Length: 94
Image (cartoon, rainbow, N blue to C red; front, side, top):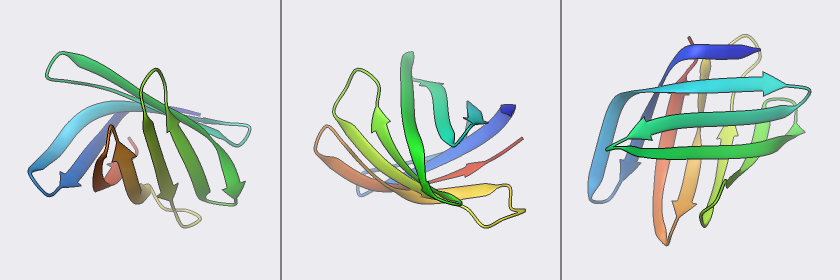
């Protein structure tokens, strides 16, 4: 399923981004998140490890992340490490 009107929030020690538009695709246990922030396209892609628990990897850069959601929820949340910076993120599907 494609969620074209989703929003992402990212939290790091030196930066917070709220309500950044993004696209989320969940199909056959594979989750992809794409966003465009500050003119930079970022994409994470990964496999569902258990129902509602995803392990993500950055496409074309050093990035790892996790995302978790409860059944019936429209919120995914987890942590990330990107190019040595650590943080948390939350995505609202829409």
